[in-house]
Image (cartoon, rainbow, N blue to C red; front, top):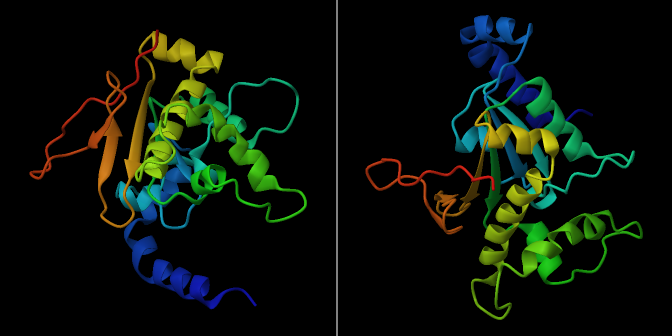
Length: 220
């Protein structure tokens, strides 16, 4: 049986949201023009549309375990994340890419703790092995905030990996595309953004809701 939770949610959508946004959905049926690509973890607690109060058609979202961007590998294999990135940048021509990490990330924890495989195929283990280059950025593994620093480091690593895609590097260099890093605190709701100069993460807004830092990555 189809999950009742989803059926009830759809009924609420038909009764409330769809009638009030019918014109927008009709426009979206013809085309989509999101300006922002968000690469986020697939963790159910981290929903970019909710965090950024975005409606349908406003964000192009890619979600995978630990918000990992692999390096550019035109090897003929199957690359789901890279395919979605290519579509967002080349076809939709987004102007911003945001790599969004989050607190208590299970993928980062699995890598850091060398977790045992969940199946003989070990899909998760093979995927989170891509976290390895970020490990050196996180520093002392015995520090109490190590996992948080690993989460931040993975955001930075994914941002670096984005620049290995020629079509992304070209757009960053000529100013058509900006890359940003962010980290969401699930328990406290705090959004941190990465300072492109220092690599440190700071609150996106102050207590008055004013923007604190620029977040675009520079391209050498």
